[in-house]
Length: 266
Image: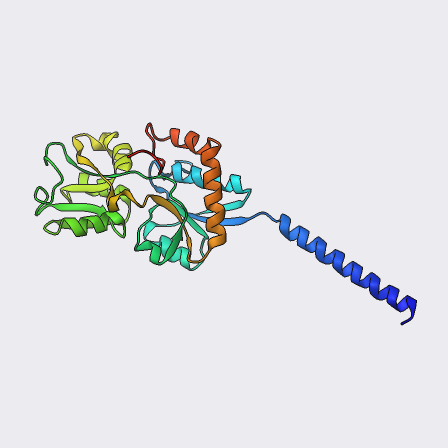
């Protein structure tokens, strides 16, 4: 082979290799892009301000994880009932919307490690019930969020009670106040912060001790599509990092005066 021909081919190979290396480097430098499904109807975890901005603990956690991952994130507002279907059809890549980890949900999505855990609580007119036993609530109508571990808890443990299923957690207390049920069952934080501490909650009180739905083993996690181990692993790493560097504690302190971390002592 003539030297000039060899030289031209060698140079072509070098240029091709350099172009591939440059392309690979450029690709490697592209930021991670994540679309995150959020709700906006679950104060103090997610809510919409008068100016239309999303806020709340879930929103802050999502933003903190994106900052830790140096990712470009888009928050996608989604109604609660459509969260998992929207994830499945790739409307977004992850759900940060106070979704309790349960065995039933784990059949259709994968979860990160828990990022918070709070117990549940019954709420009714003050003095209406001495406790939340099945006997006390027999024949009474319990209001609870549909498609939730709390709804399953009610179905399993209050078979002699009526049930009113609602589409948003805050609707539990709206329906209770409107007299369309006798007792509401929801997050101990939401019932306190979004209802009992406000004017509309006057005359109502939490009933009985707190309840760890599902034995307190689930907690709240970030849902990703089945098999998306790469994203789940990245999110778990970022969760550990924001807990270790104090970001998590700082964010939680904005909303709660007690420990909501999943590793708290019970």
